[in-house]
Image (cartoon, rainbow over all chains, first blue to last red; front, side, top):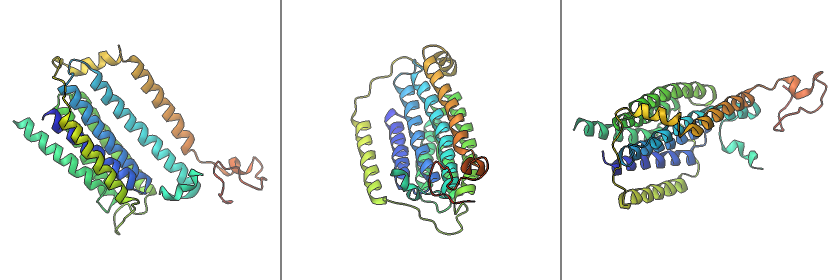
Length: 101
Length: 187
């Protein structure tokens, strides 16, 4: 349970999540990728707190921040999916491409 | 010793379940794989001595994935995986990008001269966190509170149904619907 193994686990979770967020077409699956990336961030913050600065609570505050970001991301993401579905009956990112224009 | 075995089991489970999220054919299985991965991450956080935050993560992930399953049944064309599903784009580019990113992160992790541990963990890290959030990190706490409130308002505004009186005026006489996105017909 060294700092390196913990950070490697965090990097693996982050990269996997990024892959999902970049490749998935369904908005819900894309959000799963984002969640996985934030999970990696949580592991990294806990590792740094435990192995580098345990006397300071900053690492724990970062975890609280990441958990809140997860909740906000889920809520806003599903609200956007609901709005998109109401307007267009779609749930795939490529079908919403007109939002680019 | 037990901690180490537990850590490796959780780490392998977290990484493997994370990969399986994007390999399963069924949305429901993908949700449970994500739940497994994030629960293992929460377990690792608990192993590191952050019991309170670990439990918060476990509880939050269970509720979040339950909600996600509900939305999936609402919106996905294939929630149960009854037929093979592949909804990917740009797989190759993303694989190269993510492989490079992981290699770069791993190189940084293994080569960086990490500082030595400073200080000892407090007897009660939760107390430490609470004092910090209510003291020097009060601004963080207030910002999080405002962000959550803005989220509540924003999600309600986004998800509210626009009825026909919103779209065609109070006496339904407008010829074209007044939509934020054009193109919807007369329903």
